[in-house]
Image 1 (tube, protein in one colour):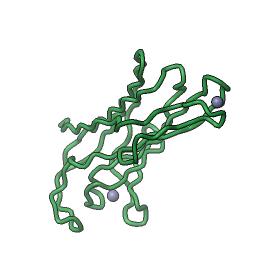
Image 2: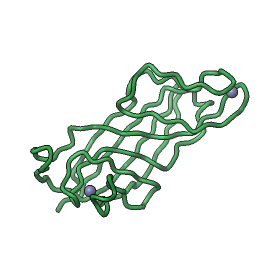
Image 3: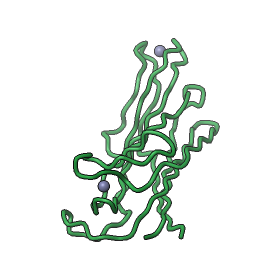
Length: 160
Ligand SMILES: [Zn+2]
Ligand SMILES: [Zn+2]
C-alpha cells in the first residue's frame, strides 16, 4: 500500500473584493481502494476528517482525508489549492473493466461571495462539467461570478 497526494488547483476568475471565503466541503473524483472502484465521488466535509465515498451504501469510507486548503489572492483572481492524502494502489475496477488511474478529473467546490452593491452574502459553487458560460448573479441583479471555463487542474503524486 502506498500513500498518495492529490492536489486540486482551482483558479477562480473573480474579483478578490467579491470573494469572501472558501467552504470546507469539497467533492472530488478519486479511485477508492476500499470498495475497489475507480472515479468515485468522494465528499470531504471538513479538513482532517475521512472522505465519504458515495454512494454511501456501497462503501464504508474513503481511506484518506483533506489535509489543507490554501488560498492565494492575486490581482484579478483567487487561487485555491486543496491537498488530499490517501492510501492507494492500482486495482482492477470490475464495473468499468479497467485498471484504476487518475485520468478522470472531476471536482465541485463551494465558496462564499459578497455583492459589492448590496453587500448580500451568498454561497455559490463551480464544478468540472457544467454548461458554460454561466453567470452567477445576486438577487439585486449585480454579477457575482462569471463561470467561463473549468478552473481546475488535477495532480496525483506518490509520496512513499
Ligand atoms: Zn469506496
Ligand atoms: Zn446585490
